[in-house]
Length: 386
Image 1 (cartoon, one colour):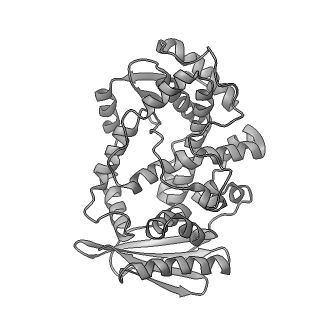
Image 2 (tube, rainbow, N blue to C red):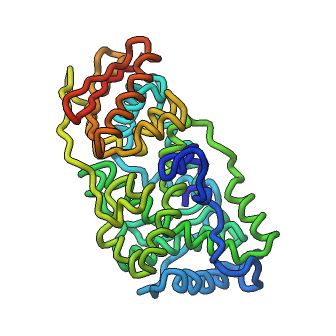
Image 3 (cartoon, rainbow, N blue to C red):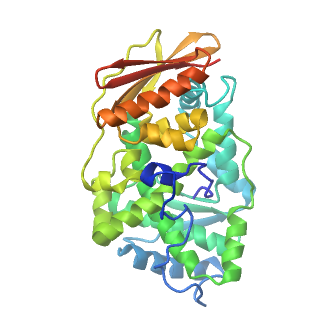
């Protein structure tokens, strides 16, 4: 479980408007999760004693039984970080370079930013436990089953249970469409966070404070805000989505969501879109003025984060509400300059006009680095790094 890094996004702006919302903040404890104290959990106890109790708790919350035991290993910080590094993918550097080009073209980071180093710093410093899909083992940073470690175990054992029933390793999602992968991650992490929040709700006040202190012991990594926002999005938005699914159709609906998962960040942020099967519209890739080095979809959350940095959250939320679909391309305009062109289709003429207004405001502030074109229902903007 990555530490619950603040996503830096007012999610209610997208779901219900910036003027106020009853949506709970990410990381808050649902009020229907039982009493606030119990003697069954918490304290610092042997791992062998903690795991069976937490496994039973996870089974109760998820309404599923483990098909087989999960191997859990507690590691010291140096060994834990070494294990994390050993699992880094061979394409990480290539992917980071693509993101650097995309983010710098959007004005989210300087073109000189070492994104691979930034992501590694955020994960190395912000991760206190993870479930390895390949080995089917769970690793936790620490040598004792403290309240914080127990909370992490409740999160990661939920991943293990879901993996046994539904299979969580789905690399094809990211290769097909970034929004598919992001939405599935939000479902999975939201499910695990929901269990963790229910577990922590049963801790004593002292143990709950100890768990929170452990989870935040590494401080906030000194990396670009956009990195924290991307890492934090599934943890910030996922629990509310899962709560909405369970409220809509019970645990059976949550299980069904793994078989037919959400397909966009819009469905995560606005669950009614998921329930009504409102899928993103098809959008053709725009023309690139050079060799394409990255392409994909910004999605509702990506477009919002971009506009929020340029215009502020309220105007950004107004501009992206009604997002229907988008596709972008990125190319290198010079040795140190990248450009991105994104074509966006909205749900209706009113939302198209609102997006065009927001993009025009950005264009006016960009000193010629960004411009907007309109062709029927499709709005296309081009943005270049400094």
